[in-house]
Amino acid sequence: MSEPLSIGLVAIGGYGNFYVRALLDGAPPEEYRIAGIVDPMAERSPRLDDLKQRGIPIYDTLGEFYAKHRADLVTIASPIHLHCPQTCEALANGSNVLCEKPLGATIQEAQAMIDARDAAGKFVAIGYQWSFCAAIQELKKDILSGCFGRPRRLRTIVLWPRKDSYYGRNAWAGALRNERGDWVLDSPVNNATAHYLHNMLYVIGDAVDRSARITSVQAELYRANPITNYDTGAAKIITDSGVELLYIASHPVSRQHGPEFIFEFENGTVRFGGGLKTVQAEFDNGTTKDYGDPQAAGETKLWNCMSAALGKGQIVCGPEAASAQTLCMNAMQESMPQISAFPDDVVKTDGAPGDQLTYVEGLDDALRACFEANQLPSEAGLPWARGGTKIDVTAYDEFPSPGYPA
Image (cartoon, rainbow, N blue to C red; front, side, top):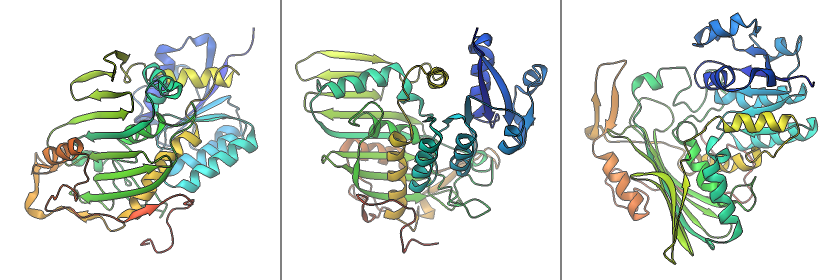
């Protein structure tokens, strides 16, 4: 009988607990063993006692872990600015990597991860779970087969209220840089809603493990919360085949909405959200197709990577696919390097400090109207809106570009 797959877990609090729970509660124990955990604040994990009872060693750094262990697969759920260095360190020590989304903070980190992966002869997967799920894989297969025809226009909106506790949970939430000066670029677009920007780019990529290639981005970035980056972003993105994408994401809203998307093709339209619980297509010939719930079976990405580490199956979302979101997000920052503050008279608060929501009066309705009209806020004539610069990204390979404010 072959040895069980050895797995290392980097960061087990926060989203990292997803991997702990999936392995302890969902994976056959004879198929894997947790070789060790890397987390200097492991006490934050709600499953710490379970892990200790299993005799799983815990370390502060990857270096300490690799001094005593090896791992066929390492999951990384650490802060954004650690994704690239920890991925590269794990690869250099002979491990395959499943790194949580987003890929990182800058497009050059994507290339560094690709180079480290190729040098190691291992794989890197980025944990955008929709890309691994049956619903999105079936949709992408149909798009690649040509049954939808060419994509014409895609749009996505995600309005998720976030309270002050969200921004106070660590030192880098909502920040351009961390305390050491490393780029983090934390925002709704590069954290909470990154999945849905990636998904819009991924489904129209020309291969199962590729996303669309983009040529330009024009964005508008705003904030209501006392942070250094933005809490509301909107962008128009153009692909190399001339397809226009609209993405809208915001946290200072009073009501939750989305994710909702509408993807228009020559031969039909695909929708999700806005009352729909599954991804549904309606073709121009009157036929329909229900692809299922993209939110289901989030553990699929882990099972996929465990199989791939044993030489079975393909990684459908690696750094090449995930870097389209990173490139777009970097270009959004370049498009409006000075974040625009919402006017004081429309910024409201609800609740006591520690559980307080800062929101912009009427913003949720205004952004939903922009989504329906396929417009940026400035195009819709909103009084607080201003347009950003259109950024050509055909040769963009490093954030920030010369001239970006330090």
